[in-house]
Each structure stands twice: as structure tokens, then as C-alpha cells.
Length: 147
Image (cartoon, rainbow, N blue to C red; front, side):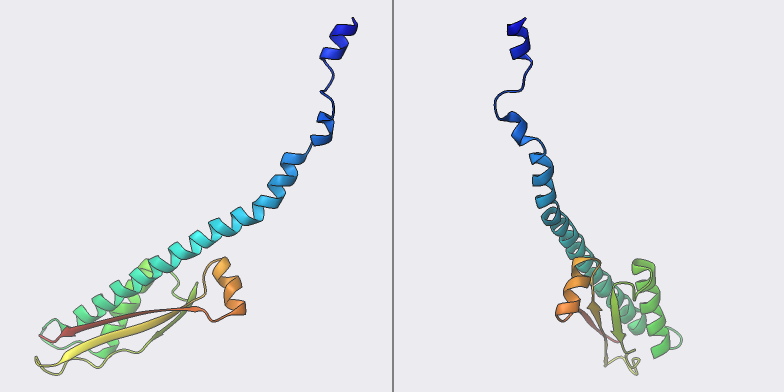
């Protein structure tokens, strides 16, 4: 009976290590969350830059294509806003857009430039960092020859 009783007992000093994994997890969890949220913010910034580039290309393309009547500045701005809202949803959700509609093409010798900038605040880590520093400014510029 003595042998069976000693086999079922905890090894010496093993009961002092209970809860160590929970403490280690509590220490590492904030670092892991910061890393994951930083990756999400970086991915969102790269996606937003891609959307801005695409929207500026679409606006420039809409402004230079020869039609019966040349598109106005408001028509070019509408194309850009539609493209941005289709891709980003609410444009001002993660930042502030600065866009001035370009002057339309007058003749076939000119060029049309669509330029915009987006002050990116971010989702989590970027929003916290924006409180202490300047937000990340994403820009997109497209120049096309008028047809």
C-alpha cells in the first residue's frame, strides 16, 4: 500500500509550477496581439494605396477618352468617388481623402492629371500611433494624354 501511495503523489516541487503557462500566456498575449493588429494595419494601408492608384487611373481614363462631349471636372470626380466607394466602402472610415477634380481636357494635345492624397489613420495600431505622430499619407497620381 505504501508503494501505490507514493506513485500517485506529485513529484517533489512540481506543485510549485502550477499556473506558469497561464502567466507566460498573459505576458506574451499583448505582444502577439500588437503583431497581428500591426499586420492587419499594414495590409489595410497597402490595399488602400492600391485602391487610390486604381481610382486615379479610372478618373484619368474617364477624362481623356474622346466622347461626343468632353467629361467635366464633376464627371471625373464622380468616377473617382464611385470607384473609391465601391472598393473602400466609406472613404473616411480609416482616413481623410483630399481630392481636387482636375480641369478637363480642352484639346488632343493636352494632358490630364488626376492626383489625390489620403491621410491614413489605420484600424488599430495605426489609430493609436496617429495620436502620437503624424498619420501616414498615401498619394496617387495619374497623368494621361488627352485623345
